[in-house]
Image 1 (cartoon, rainbow, N blue to C red):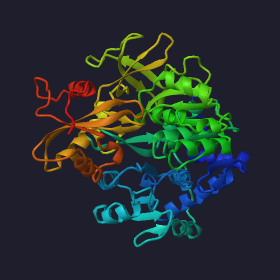
Image 2: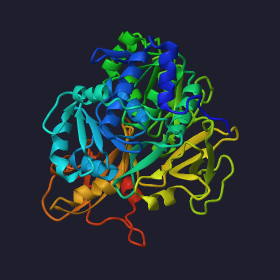
Image 3: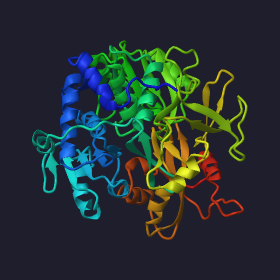
Image 4: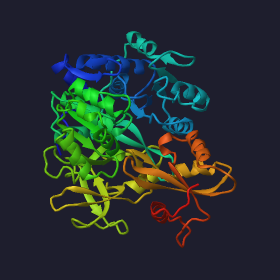
Length: 526
């Protein structure tokens, strides 16, 4: 089978773009007023890659990145790839316990970070955890030096004295360890290859018609695979320009699109709804937009149609994917008539089948079952978790997604909206109940807890918790307790009090019954 992308690795793509169109804009970050051409991006990434090698970061070593969307992010991303190391992006919402687990589990030997973002003080948190992280040898802060932490300038100065030669990179080598939540509540790290990520982003950008004239902006943070793979590697391979924003605000996004003449926009249903209903939208010229992607939660085709007409954003498409598949599994062409209602055909190189969840037998078209996929975009496995890898990827290479869908007679993928697992998708962020339940059970007044998702017009789903109590406690107290331990997007928005949980004959909590009762107003609020 021929390669899915003309570029074997990100480094090869950046070198080719720098040689062919070095003076063209590559990265623009309006909030900070900073930008880079392709030549500047290549120069910065090459110097940083040399610095990594000079500091002893060898081929296959894990390098962490904890920062909001900023200019340094894609520089580090390409530098790690060019050095032959493995990029480990961390969720910027992580609080102390989330971050402690991810840093320890990933065994990063070097960590790049921002001093802080919003109320999250990364440098301070990492300093407090440092003694528990024996693998972490080097910390580099983008904003300043600190005890035990180098500034970025101090770190890159090593490249001028080290003289390290950048290695040749195997396209099938592990390129990134991307964390995604697991059914145990602890994040699992999907191991992705250069070949898989490059093929995925090349296929996506092809379906979207991306060219050198495009300027792609996104509300999806770069730590998400849709940010650093779909957007960054898609832009890179097509020679387009990425316009980055550190956080989402509808009116700010309108100004960025208008001022930068952005042609493409990626987001989740929550962000598109907020922009669609914002009163300031009509005051801005968004006519430069031509295409975009929406995914990350149950997507209403009517919402996409409204956005396509109102912004206007004619080439908006519904997408479906998973981190474990190097981002997307399917999306329609940006001009396809059914681009709002389906996720289109599978990407080139990706096979998709629908199976009976109980038997594993393949189902015919139009029948709902579990979505499974196979191809070089599928992860190598979960880092340090062979059991979970075996549960997810069969010996025949088919990967279970845990999501329900169907294939049309034309081969288009339709997401049926259900999930075999208990995952809640709140505004594009994955939340697993087990992790939230563990946090709630850590409160002295909580005897037991069951966490489930409730439909929400804005977020798609919100997190809800039913608790049995062992003492007096308020919803606010439990929310504050959770917020100190887990990322804020995981904190329940609604709390209910129950005397006992509905359960199956085997004793498992029937969360569907809780969800139905709460939706109907039958559960008393805490």
